[in-house]
Amino acid sequence: MCDPAGIVEFVYSDKSCVICNSSFDTSVCGGSSCKRVKAGLRGIEGLKQYSVLHCDEQLAKYLESGPEAIFYHSECYKSITNDRLLLQKRHSDTRLETVVPSKSLRSASAGFDWKEHCFLCAAPIITDTRYSAAKDSKSVRTLEIRNTILDACQNRQDSWSMQIWGRLEACIDLVAEEAVYHKQCYVNFITGRSIPKDNNVQIPKSVDEKKMAAFEALCAWMENSSELNSISELHEVMAELAGHDEDVYSEKHLQRLLLKKYEGEVVLTQVAGRANVVCFTNNASKV
Image (cartoon, rainbow, N blue to C red; front, side, top):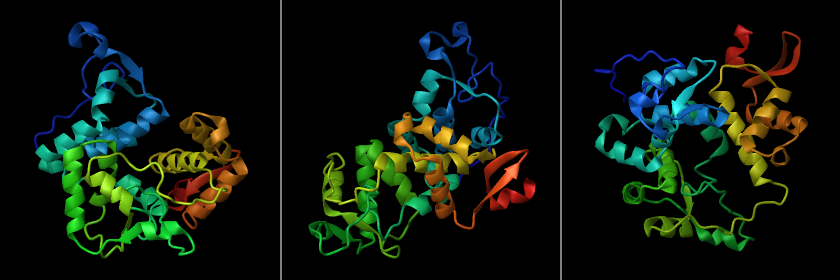
């Protein structure tokens, strides 16, 4: 849990870095490290995620308030989003041991299933015995495996271990969750090798991984945003998150996916003359 005791209240402004709260004046903090950067969509989402992971409640609340513009030092952003530094900080700061980014849990639970996805690489597990890949996965049978993986995370301190660490923080009992994993993923992770490029997972050709990744990024953005956006506006955001217009679904397909993913949780409405505005039902009364 985060301990608010001893925390100094900061006053955020466009004159200082939102991360370190120091001035952008190079004569004060010195050199290129004081370069002033305006946060884009990806920068804001990165700050939201890592402010929670770093237990920076003030910054997290400020970002949730939806400020018009956010500025930071380029070096400060690199530091706060550095997975290796975060893991080192977690090991030395007990406040961070149980920090779980609660705002991301809905998207995580919607896209990840302990029973159907490898908890190490997050790729789907093939269970159909007609495919040879069905023999390449196992179910978690002992509680010790979680500690084994967490120990490996401490030893590796890389991007892959950071992803797994965050996943395991949301699950104490892998056996009860009926978690599954790829045998090769386990071997590679424990022995310090990289994530397998081919887990023998035969994903149907109709599934475009890049488009789905862009859609999931959009869902995370929506869940951390207080804005009301139309399908057309969300499509533009998704394209920006993907970086390439050709790597995203069409507006019609995006609408179908949102209604399916958030069935019973979102509605399409008209706001101030704008049609097909997506609104979470828990915010509908505010419209």
